[in-house]
Length: 144
Image (cartoon, rainbow, N blue to C red; front, side, top):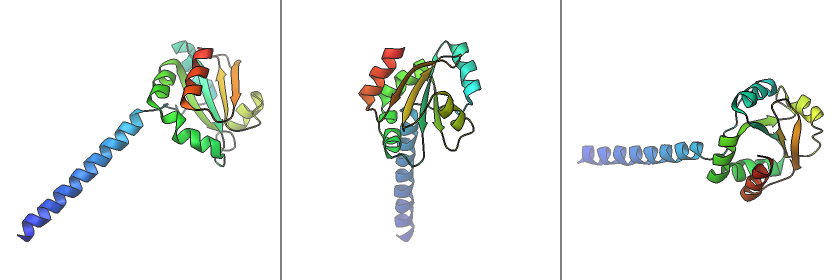
């Protein structure tokens, strides 16, 4: 009897683990996929793919930045559009290698600042502040 109970307990734990794994895999599939590229690498990729570059210029201490990362950037409809149409970068302007240079070049003074640039590095559009998923989609469609 003890063996049956132990096997049932192992089965329950295994099923819970598998369900949790499915959820985290699903969450990873949704939302904007930010690439780990330098600005120069992103410009080359944007030129090859004939796309604009989307940059989320943020800081680790920025509340609205964290909220967007947890909400707006995770929406499937936002992720689908941005992933298909842009080279997406997430740059901590205080810590990332290109961060201070990007902040200087594009005059980033508040956070979050969302930048759309072309493959040559020319600024197409800049928006400051928290954006909802719908606002992000409208913004992307206006520059695309």
